Image 1 (cartoon, rainbow, N blue to C red):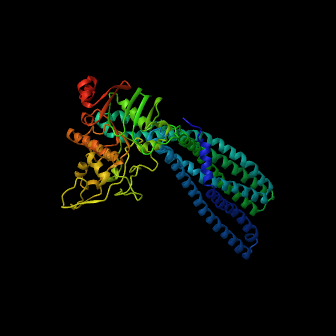
Image 2 (image 1 turned 30 degrees about the vertical axis):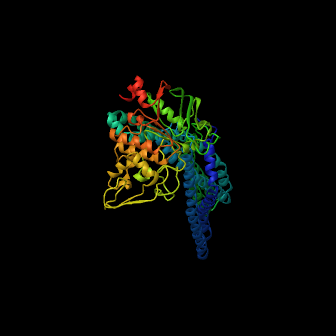
Image 3 (image 1 turned 135 degrees about the vertical axis):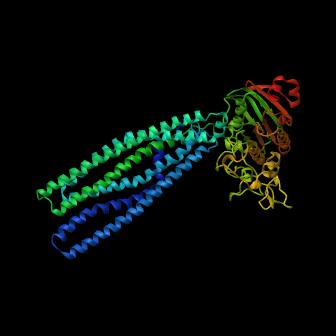
Length: 623
């Protein structure tokens, strides 16, 4: 869905305007190259008429020197003109990638709706590159027009009929090449769309490979990708066929045009209307015209593909935000009172409950979709269809999403880890990219691009740790030991407490390099329980005023879970924490539990009270 944002034409136009200086300089330089190329056959004709046919050695040497200077000039112009054109293309593509990244990472979200992540990557790479190439094609087209005009003027000096033939014939030729490019534009759009979808499907399959193997769904996944890949191949072949017809048609038109020019020149020479030198110049100019006309064929194809790609980029930039911007501010400091007032969203039907400031509240939802809906409303990934979610009395729907997520951190159950060290996945980075050892809290997550909203689908990272602590004696420290046995822990302060509370210090103690162990992409080198503990430590290290955690211990053993439950209660004391879980160990340490069934609160009380007095609660939590 579009929001009245840029159209494909707007994207293409702004891309060109943004590189106008590079394009202008490149166009002048490449036009100079075309002028030099057009002068070469003219100079050869002059040499034949004035030097070769007369035997004047001095004139021959002088004109050969002029020809050499012309070659040097056109070579220089081509080299630097092409450099400016390529620079404009690469800068334009880079700027488009930046715009797409900003839109995808906009706190209001929405750009990813209806698109796979691989499709977005394809748009930001392939489509941006195709639009960028238009900035290299534009100077070439200007140079080609210049070459045609210079060639026509040169032919006019040789013969008025030849010059007029080129001047009046070239526009019809350009119109014909434009018509030939329309099918290519349509098929290029389909090709890029199918290729992007195939990339998205492939990325999803690779990300879920372990799950697919676990449930024995590899054959179905392979069949799905085979169909998608086949569709992409078909679209690519159709686009290639259209390009072949386009190039062949343009070549045929230009060949016929050049042949007509050469035939007319030959007829004029046979009737002694032009000299032998003029005939050679005319034939050479006719051959030269193949260059500008071939450039037009290439430019037309690039413009057709660029317009199609610009439309796909515009569809992302103009995508409707998932939530509104909001104009109100949260009170300072944030006390942490969270209130759901008659919220209707997805499976939620008039949901009403309150988390008091500093309370550790347990939320039990028999329907997993209800739990997800609560989290989406808390993180302002979506606004309720009815009712409101408030923080300290301010409706979250009236606050800018990034400001909401700075105060309310949603730690999703499926939070990802990033490639890097364990400590980099937990502690916030300093400007030089190293984990902070001291100083104020930093809200931007490690490994998360600048501008990504904290808590938006990822578990955030938080403040840097305190001063470094040296652990001596050669004994393994639970937070990191080097290969020689000397350990240096950069895990004091909040980060150290978060590691301990989440049981991630035990994970570090099992790794050869402790907290400096390099984790594979998405933490695939760790077990599920280890990944969960590190992700939880990352959420706790943020020390956010409000923290909502969803099933953080589903992959750990009972003993570790009990320790984590106590650690969460201790580290979050005085801070509002909402535990959305069915784990008895976690619910046992909460101050209060609310039960959501059928989209509304059906019971509330302490864990002990609900276990003894609520059968449905016992069935959900203890079985």
